Image 1 (tube, rainbow, N blue to C red):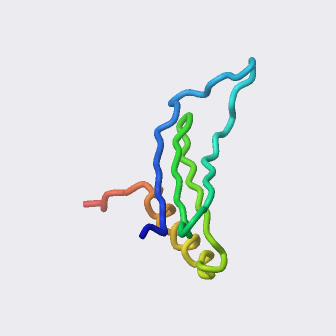
Image 2: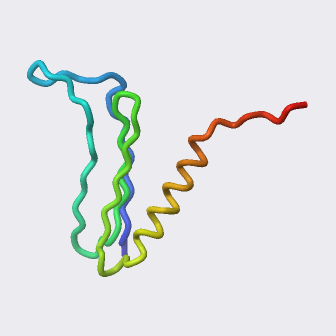
Length: 86
């Protein structure tokens, strides 16, 4: 049985125009159905990466802990690695 879904999509590298207006942000959205209790979606668009998490609150009461850990990990990954002075 599956209870987690993950999807990553490479979006447009440059902003697109719809009816003459630039699309500023694109946010991936998912629905939970059946026995799915957690989803992670990642979408890149115009140089930005957006990650959304959708969870069944009854089955994942510790979701704030997971999100805090994800934020910490992304902060560490985003920091530039500075080589040690020799």
